Image (spheres, rainbow, N blue to C red):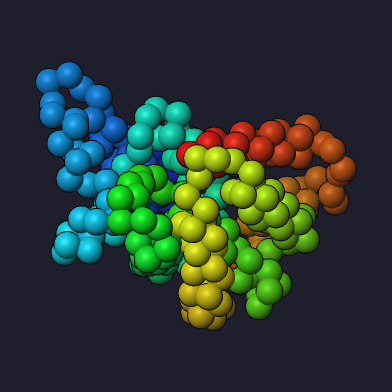
Length: 240
């Protein structure tokens, strides 16, 4: 479920929302770093600044989700989205997925607005990505049949490590992470009922590896690679 085996062409066709979000990430980053473009203006106008939001610049509740402060920040946030997002875009459908992604990110930024100082400035999609984790938790709590046992264990491990590291690392918007996670759990608990008819097909996807191999294998090369990918994604995601 979290291992991507599609070609680039197939990925863009199967997951157009995730492809579009990552494309926006890259375009905005390039506009910020290209020498002939006023990149400072992009950051100045789109970054989340609580003071400016309170003065009426409400678009700053949305735009920080697509803006990043450097290449590592861009790389790991986009990598996390590509790793954790496709399963949800499939089960929720494109419209529901983008609605939930934006909603959890916006709610995380609203929480940041009210709980952080007016001078607080933030960028990055980690609040929305934690929202995806929350949606997975909603599946585990309310629709267990949507995930295989193996993937349930992976998701729970991701959430536990993510929450712990949120409080350990210094340069992390703790408010956005926690409220993004809670928003995903709450909104996801309502949204997954609308995906009931897709449950059987989603189960086939999440269990494809198990059925093809005749059963789960502990510490197989695939499992080790998956663990390393998730570890790297979380470290990068939590480095800001």
